[in-house]
Image (cartoon, rainbow, N blue to C red; front, side):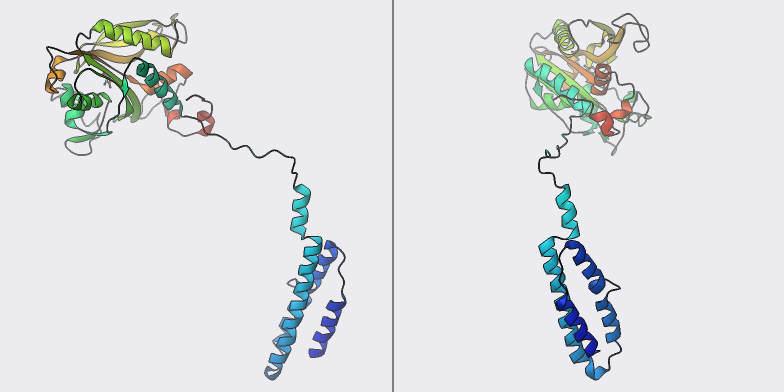
Length: 338
Ligand code: DAH
């Protein structure tokens, strides 16, 4: 064995490597799994115990020489891996572009609405999504037996605590902390116990507006919303009010705008009426002012609330509300806006 080792050592020392290809052949011959060194380690197992020490030393020496030889060759000619890298490294290429995200379409719509009302002096305000009965219902004059209080419509967290069903709850929070004049715009997520479909979801977004001051009239409400529609949709849009009912406003109305798809001619989307509904509104019921400690003799106010999904669907002609929460990047990246 000793003789054999010396012979191989001689052989390795006399081997000269001139290229990366030769280095690879050398590596295969001596250092690969089926190479000479491994064969020697197999043979080493059969060496009598008393010789193991000195033969082992020789083997280690041999292994070091073999390793050094290939390391030197690789340093001199480059490894195969580096060789490939070098041939693919094109320093004149431009850098990989970093893909920018885009704003969610609902946020784009919300920001537009908030901006329009900001310019009219409405202050951005928010409230909690988990609310007590007072802020979501009682403080807004909902009768004890109103169907909205039913388990079928509302997600209850506890007997008196629920996920808010509308952003009108933030009105109550404002009235208890502020004194008039109050002028605020309040967006947020709301929850209702509804079966999910193309037109309904168990969570969606609303934006609420309120203005309380001396001498606020229904004419102010109409003019404010008219201005909003012109800014949001365009000058050619008209509005109309239909009488309605909400427990917290009196009188109450729903507002329609001319259908953007048929320009008022009548189509499937507007059910051939030429109008689409976009919000609920009204004069704040004096009962609501009183129960929130605002002098109803001195002050009046108007309020309105609209669905952000609905406005976004109308603006971008989106037919299925579920796409807003599916998080499909192919849908989301079509939108650009701030
Ligand atoms: N909270 C109502 C809803 O969720 C919308 C609404 C109607 C808000 C009239 C108002 C209002 O502020 O005055 O359907």
